[in-house]
Amino acid sequence: MVHIGHARYLEAAKKHGDLLIVGIDSDEKVRERKGPERPVVPQDERLEMLTHLRSVDLVFLKDLKHPKWALIKAVRPDVLIAVKDTYTKKQLKELKKYCGKVTVLEYQATTSTSAKIRLLQIGTAKKLGTSLTPKIIRTIEEALNEIKK
Image 1 (cartoon, one colour):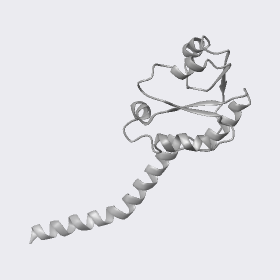
Image 2 (image 1 turned 90 degrees about the horizontal axis):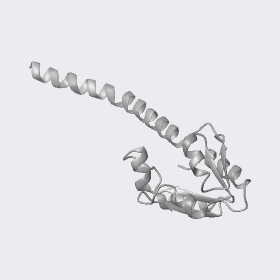
Image 3 (image 1 turned 60 degrees about the horizontal axis):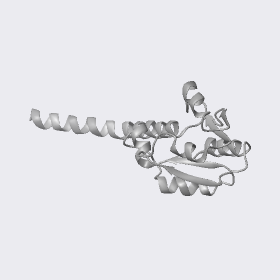
Image 4 (image 1 turned 135 degrees about the vertical axis):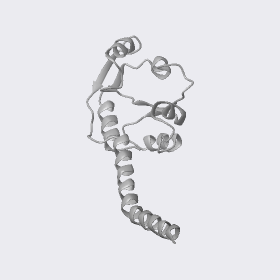
């Protein structure tokens, strides 16, 4: 789910160069990393959404079968933009072989897609608990009363 943090991050990244190339993980790659229920938004929609952002010039799909850092190695950007926790310090050092410079940006918002999904799940669970619990108890009581007869 694209949120304001993504848009702000891409705007900030664009300030570091003339052309902003964005790699998007394929659905298969996201599932491998985040589990079978992800992504929430299919790759075609995520790709198209990013093409509508003024800061983004090119978008590429990163497939699970592609070698590690294939896009970075192919483009060899003057500046690679990352966000904290994307790469380890060791990986950042290795990435410098393929880039003129690696810049790590701070998070641009307090929200995340995973956090939004968790809030939706918690809200749904509360609603189900509130509406279903009395019905389940009533059904069990009725079944027990039938057995007692």
